[in-house]
Length: 245
Length: 376
Image (cartoon, rainbow over all chains, first blue to last red; front, side, top):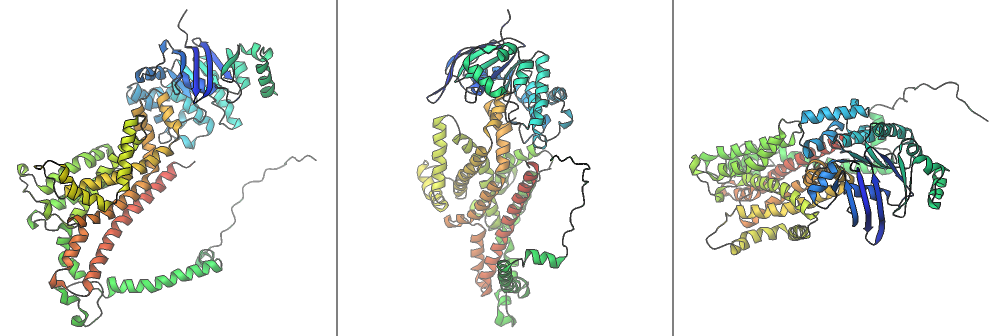
């Protein structure tokens, strides 16, 4: 059996005295799409920010593509180069054009030449269908276009795993679909996706497994059909009753 | 009841604006009682100051002459405003102090290099601004020092700093303050936000010390106390001492301005760079710092204007800056006339006003340009 993309064992984290992640165990296989859902404050975002070391964890082990995540800056960078992240608020570099956003890290962190980085960036921008905005400033684009640019920026680093932190929560409803479409296309090409989202339709159609978190722990993991049609845990049932109405 | 629109209204041209100068005046100058009173008060003040200023600076001014007599009302038989003849005769002294006349091409070349460096940095569309930064922050300081103080090895006669004076010294002090305080201030601001407690507290201590001490005290300390701390056989040039003091003083203020900019940049910007596998230094240099510095351009220029004016304080520790040579020039008995002191101070005011106003205008231009780029 090949190395899983992600392996979390007994991950614990505290913010001050608040126990925000309580013994998280989760294994994500290569090419798998996992959707994490749960009420706000359940630790979903914190969990995926721990996976690329943006937040330190205080207990347990995280392995990404076979690398153990440690505090060592070089290891952290090696892990992060293989893990793309898309944020709720896009976080595009506002002083750079869309194209420069996509070439900055490949040039500085991977040592690519400008020519190679730009060629790669144009290919990725084309893949999320905003190549025509390559020379635009991020703030001149719509929210949906900005988020697709952010996805392209992450793809330019050739990540083995892509993390999405509520990628559509900051978008106007009419722009949610274009971002979900881009994510669906990625899932179909075999990229490993871990996605925190409230888009239950997306979870049902695209996810291989759905993870439900509450109060810092994983309450239920199931394939989408089983998860939505026959949730086992009472908390899952209550949550689904609230979000699906 | 249900409503369904049966035709879409096409766009219509906007209403015509009431035009003409009269309408403009009514809307902008005399829109209400308060507005009328304010307008009249300010117009009245202008009517009172304007003519007096014009008479002093231009109409009654004396433009030619070889001694103070040319500027005495009882000698020339008319009211006398500014005595520009005095400035004209002393202009070389005001510009260079006692710098030897035969070597004045060196300060002139320095002025030229300074102008080149400033233009290179300030003109946003200039070619190779990265080279310009090297020129301003590395080549210019060394070249200027060799040029002005002399390098016998290069065939440039030594000129003691005691002979430097006037606008030359004012520009040297300001330029050193600016060129040193920007990079130092940025480093201090970064240090103040560092995760390393020792570095952080060292930077905080440094910044708060220099911010807590008046510049005049800094200058006295540099002049009197610095030699006490150094070994007996080490002497520091009399001009260099206040230069060091001013550079450190200005960098503390600059650090606080830059820190404000760093705090204004959302944490997500740096996190996005880290998440892409960049080092913290790369994230700072390529993502956070460029945005932070843009935000604080007005604050930086404000600090630089303050620094430029504060350089007059070096006169206190015996440096012959512009104001001090002006004082010396007006003490010339050959040019003793009632109009001379007012002329001297008016000239100083115009000089400082011209420089500071240009800096402020430039900051305004940059701020508008950035606002146009960052509209959201």
